[in-house]
Image (cartoon, rainbow, N blue to C red):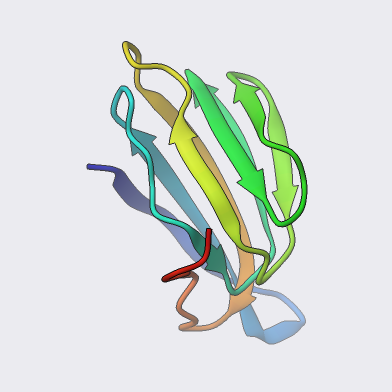
Length: 111
């Protein structure tokens, strides 16, 4: 089961309806998340391990420790999985989002 820790939520100066939301996500070896989308754009950075990802129409890709990537809002995240069956993966996600927004929404029935 994935672990998601909220590390920071902070208002953005000059944008009273927006906030930064910083989360740490941990997938166990072999773990695969359900298809989903995010309601706000994000930047992610892989701290350790390797993350397998496929967003929108882009091809599947593996991000390793030290690599980062961007995801636009509302694009379906078809694959979000630990690329390893023996090592965990941990990554940081930074959203710029409306205050109190639901950031992750399951994409039921979308493959």
